[in-house]
View 1: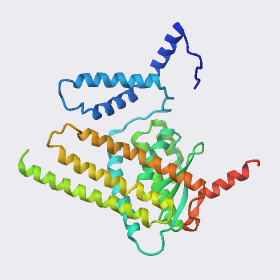
View 2: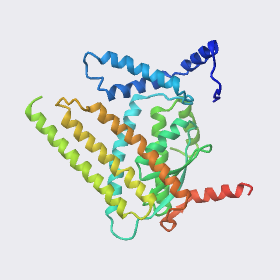
View 3: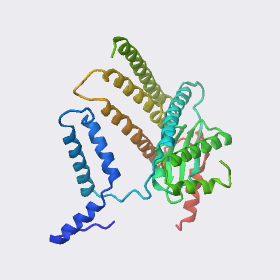
View 4: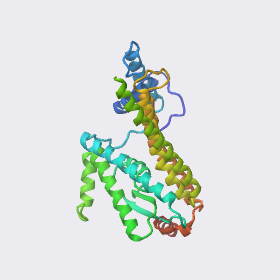
Length: 203
Length: 127
């Protein structure tokens, strides 16, 4: 991304504005407008609802023009059924993980031991990496410590994994979570990546 | 909505609020009982998030039938969403800094693949 130090003038400025407007992404505008509407209770129908919606779109476009960000690389593709399953599974896992940590909190005796394990992700997209690491921290007994970015390795701290078997189990859970995420919101290429690399080892 | 319905919703809401509060308490106890920062991150990331979500659900059930001017279910949704999105990031940053600055109890780690990785990288770099 190149930053201009000198302010462009005249037609130059117009062109720069148009270029920035071209970078406005409809998906981002839609999601920002959604947040805006939720904040201002815009979904309760009343006189000013339409005005709120228009204002929300304008503010989102303004934000994207003033603070342009590089586009989300490969984008995402929503598969509703798999996404619903991912969300349902997420809440089930969240409950299970909470109960597990609660049990570890109240287990008397010496402090609980743990491991740091490396998990090699299979998909190549940044978005999948981010989603996986966010969800991994909340759910199955792990906290992400370090992300090896170019090689796509997540280093997880797994509470209560005291032997090789526990570590392997945590690694499998993490990879399964990645697979669920990719199948829910990944592009066709992400899924192809995933299947290409699981082909050798089995699911 | 019938009175009976509202009573049932109220009870569910009460249960959610109590469960959420208890989970937050567990998270607090965990912070005291766990030995090192990395373990403590777990209590901050899991029971606490679920506890907050349950409290939000409870509040949502309570305020859905009545019209308040202050906040609504949408606001609660946003609170929950941003909590889920930001807690892991904060936890990750804290854990990363703790790890890199050596503020962890290595005697509690059974295997540490990150240490091996860092060592390899340090060996590769010309010093």
